[in-house]
Structure formats: structure tokens, C-alpha cells
Image 1 (cartoon, rainbow over the protein chains, first blue to last red):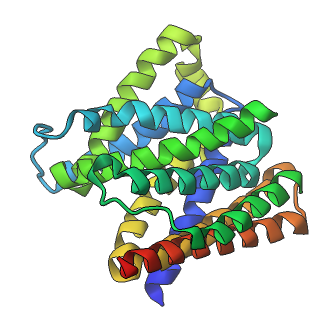
Image 2: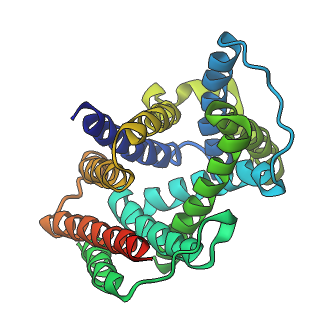
Length: 140
Length: 149
């Protein structure tokens, strides 16, 4: 039960993060928001790793792993840009739908070395519910 | 408005790719160092982009300290959330953990839309319930299909 509460809290904190990053858009350009969001996390994480005396080396990963920072910028910038205009719930509803569909594509074609998992027609009612839910949130 | 909706949708795609890339980074460097490479690269790249595309004076201390301190807490929330998700997912079922985190995520979005913009409607609550129901269905059928294979 404790772990479910932790997960619920984690989700709530992510919601807070999206909203607060959106609010930063009132004061900064999208890239400056990215700078603060990533910079603050960098300082905290670096302090943790240094305290644990973890050696810092980044060799031997596939090439696309080194692009992860650029992707992080695109995500944070688009999140704050959209949240400020459409609100957190509309943004998260549509973004969640995007995540589910892209996950399905990743599974379908086995991208990133994931095991291939073909689309199952029994999933269609779920997609209908998802589309109806997103439509209600957007027009609500 | 369509552009914002489209960008939100693409953001979801980027999140999935980012998740996969982070998993790979975690496998290569460990969870904490895997996240560090993301934050390190993004911090310096975004700083360069600020200087190239906008007015760098927005990073002047006078402006930085004039912004309410609570607005900067998003990064800390994200970091704590990441740790809690790792801990929670290790001790629960993956599908259930994703749904529970989404309940918190979308539920909090409803609350904060009310706090920041005064927006609330029961239609949105029903919409979010349908989204959660839809995702549960999709993932359950995906798991059922995998078991049948």
C-alpha cells in the first residue's frame, strides 16, 4: 500500500512540475526555462553523486544516448509553451495519448531493441475510450 | 490552438523516446549517472540556445531573484518524482504502477488548473477517468496478447 501511495505522490509531483514549469513561462523564454529546470536538477544530482564518491565517466553507450539532453530540452520547452496556453490538464491529456500511441509503435516495430509486440484488435475499445476522454478534456 | 494541441501530442511521442533513451542510459551508466548525462547536456545546450535565440539579460541576477522562488521548484518535484517512481515500480506491478502514477499526475493537473487559471469542470474529470480506463484496457490487452504468444 505504501508503494502505491509513493507512486500516487510521484504522479502528483509530476503534475506540479508541469504546472510550475508552465508558470516559469510568465518570466522566461522557453530555453531559459530549460536552463533552470535542468540546471537545478543537475546541481542536486551532482551533489548526490559526489557525496557517494561515484566516478563520473560516460563512455560505451549507443550514440543516441548522447542525444538525450537535446530531447530533454525539446520536452521541457514544449511542455511549458503548451501548458501556459492550454492549461495542465489539456496538455497532459493530449501528451498522454501521444505517449500511448508512440509506445504502441515502439512495441509494434521493436524500436530501441524492445521485443516486438504486435497490435491486438482487442485493444481498440481502449483507444476509443482514450480518444473520447481526450475529447472531453479538450472541450470541457 | 491546433498548434498547441499538435505540439502536446508530439511532446508525448518525445516522452516515449526519451523514456527509452533514459532506460538505455541507465543500463549503460546506472540510474543516477544516466540521468546526470541528460541534465548536464541539457543545461549547457539550453544556456547556449538562450544566448543564440533570446535576450541573455533574462539570466541577470536581478531578474532571476525577482521571480517567485516557488516557480523554480518544478525541477525538484521532477527529481523527487523520478526517485519515487523507481522505488515504487520496483515493488509493484509495472502496469498498476503506471496507472497509479497517471492518476496522481492527471488529478493534480486538474487541481492546479483550478489554482492557477480558475478552470474546473466535471466534464474534464469524466474525460480523465475515461483516459485512465482506456489506458488500463489497452495495456491489459497488450499484456494478454503477450501471454497468448
